[in-house]
Length: 459
Ligand code: F0G
Image 1: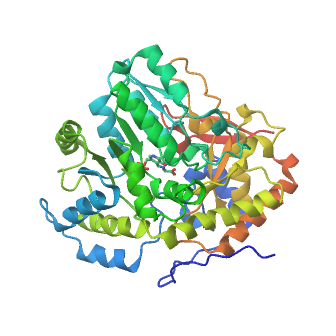
Image 2: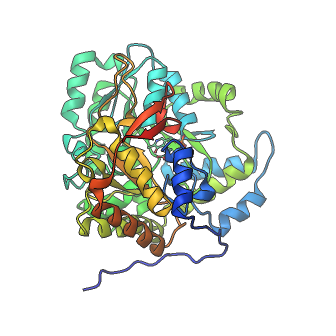
């Protein structure tokens, strides 16, 4: 029986040509890029699944908003539209715009974290943890154990383990925890959601301890979709109302508008806390710009304001997550090891299981991403030992349980046919997986090494 199809809830108005390269060309490009897909030129990528960040296709309404953007230095109409959109759709009182998510992370971390602090979170994210550590904090993972098991079918694999959180509070004291950091969804766990019940429990517990709850709301709309689909009592509720309820169990959020908000650049810090808001307004001037533009052009704020209303359209988000799943199930059905359940923004290949003959020191996910590019011009991203970096205390590699290659689907950009090409290439590599060799690292920067590290193939 044919699976029910959800077609694109949009039609195409402008196209951007892409070009297939030859295999010898791609071998050369990959070698020149040091076997790091971040260092490839986009013109040399046929299908670019490096990230869903800033790669969305904007709507005609958003493009019209670019022209309509108000570029006044202060009090811009486009800023007021963005502020109103965040208040109406997310429900927070105060908004401070930033150039992207990490700008908001910088504000939050600089304002609240002191040396000796601990920040619990449901799995780390690279830039989030880097800002916590820069300010002297220590990240502590309090996600449920199932999240670290690529094959576990838990429907809400992003959930916080409240017992782990309680144990941390018992060990270090609530006074040393500036906030609980909850990501909805959890990127590095595979785009896995957090249930409404868990969000409620975490808020209840933290409120009792006097610990604020801050979300990383980067992909909160995708999280809302999973709640609508999987959590009892939510099937008949709109995405907009589910999102609002989710946010009501937090005190604020950092946000990369480059994902959910359907724009190419932008972010914000939002909060209900007056003191945090006042301090963020003071600090944003130093790093980003006035609290009424935060490093963004008026047109960028206009596009983000419009994207915020579009992102909560029920048909849009059902198709978006459905498309990720369309690719994921082709691979799972053929026996390719990938993180289950398929998450909201990407299909994550399980490189450990794909390449059992490679040790983690041979960078299996980095290598698989390089082979995929050479095979078909599809650009993916490593999310394993290279992304995890080194422990600042010991200087040793961190060895994450999840060693993944992320095939990230940009929003409203590729057709299912493109995804068929991706699936075909992954399946071909899977058939000859024992011929895939590992890598050694020949250049490593001190922080966020995955962006610029270079590798060479092992013999
Ligand atoms: N939080 C999460 C969960 C993210 O995925 C990202 C970015 C950020 C924060 C930082 O936001 O890039 O706007 O500064 N993730 C991108 C990715 C880079 O490819 O997953 P940013």
